[in-house]
Length: 205
Image (cartoon, rainbow, N blue to C red; front, top):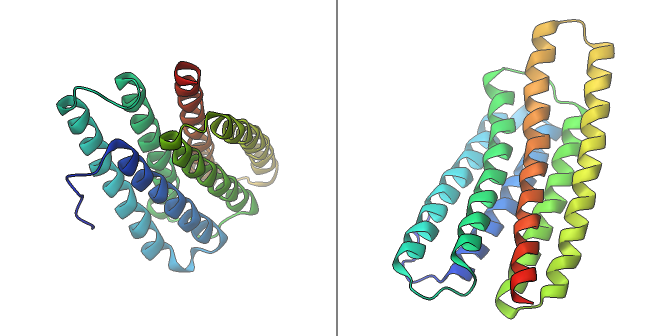
């Protein structure tokens, strides 16, 4: 666990959170492509989730101590909270695959995880434009995030349909339904991040 720098500004802390989102999503792809190293991968994702919790706490603490903020206080709070939720859901999917002792992954789970990588990368890039106030670039990235969320919804619905058609064991269905819901929930939380970024652009452009 890295020690947090006490002199970081909001943009630097957002950058650190964004990097963790990208790292966690890539680990999630590795996990759902192959469960062979699941214990290690879930541990790494859990560590990133814990680190982001600490970063989010530091952002809130700094917010309470800072009189003048670069963007509206409520937007800083919302952005930090929703990015934290994004990683929470990724961790939730990974953790459930382990505690449910699911033996093999599915193509749909890997596909959902891959869309989360693309979404996390877009969030990270959009965050980099906040400091430089390149708001048109942020909006472009948000549009792509919304498109990815739609793709995730499609994969999710098709995965559920296939599962109910092909799997007869109700326990297995319950387990995978929770995993899929967390993966889809992560995409929803990422879209919440995009919505917050759009609100910031509207206020500041």
